[in-house]
Length: 194
Image (cartoon, rainbow, N blue to C red; front, side, top):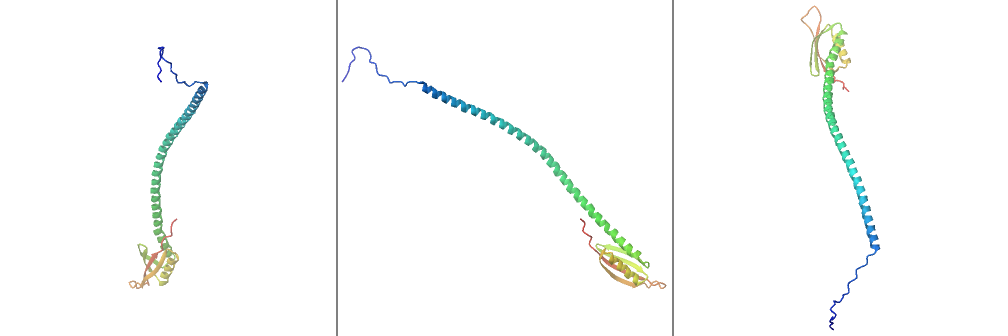
C-alpha cells in the first residue's frame, strides 16, 4: 500500500530516543576523577622520593669515588713502602750474614791463640785457610807439646776434624831438639743464625 500525504506537511518521523543523562553517571565520572587524581598524587610523591633517593645515592657514589681515589694514593704509598721495606730487610740480612761470617776468622784465630798460649814449648810458623780447610804449621820442642796442641784444638769444637799431617825432627839445629809439624783441620759448619 502506498500512502500519499495530501496535507503538504512533512510527516514527522519518529526519532530514536536519546539516552537519558542522569546524575548517577556523574558520580561515576567523579569517582573516576578522584581515583585518577589519587593515583597521580601517589605517583608524584613516590617519584619525588625516588628522585631524593637517586640524589642521595649519587652523593654516596661521589663520596665513595673520592674515598677510592684517596685509598688508591694510600695503596700506592703502601706498595712503595713495602718495596722499600723488603729492600732494607734484604740489606739487613746481608749485613747480618757478613757480621756472622766476620766473626768466624776472629773465633778461629782466638781459638788458635788460646791453644798456643797454653803451651810454652810450641810456636806457630804458618797458617793458611782455603774455604773450610785450615793448614797450620809450627815448631815445638817436644812431641808432647804437639799432642797437647791437637787436644786443645779438638776440645775447642771449632773444627769438625783435626789431623796431624806430618811431624819431623828438625836436623838443622844440632844443639836443640826441635820438631816441625803440620796440622790439617776442617772447620765445623757455623751455627744457624735465627
